[in-house]
Image (cartoon, rainbow, N blue to C red; front, top):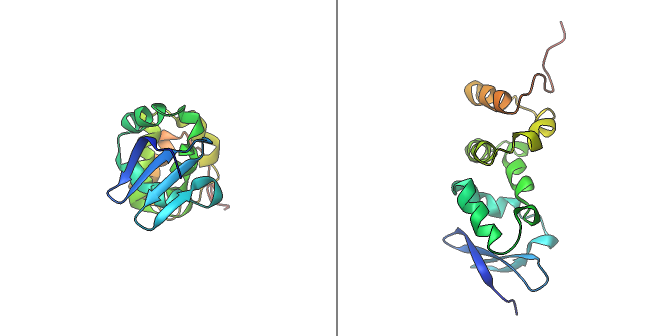
Length: 138
């Protein structure tokens, strides 16, 4: 059915690969899914446990990094208020030197749910001077 080349291990139960049409396919114990046809970010979160450069090298064996939806993957935990995954996503931003890509997006994120220490780190790394709800009206 699918040609599997240069598989990327997501976790012990799931792998990613490109099919013959250059679509990312997620294969797991419950089936095979074309990532272009459903919201997949939650299923890819374990990729954030990898070092960014290791991940980048794995993807580039099959295609360019720009062809992988890594930006959506990084945004997902912040937009869904998932602290542990957000910490790993922020590490990817730093390790991949991606701050400029995310700077404008970071200004739109609700940071009220973040613990103060992490919030300050997030705002400093992404050079955010203001965000929704700050500065407060007096």
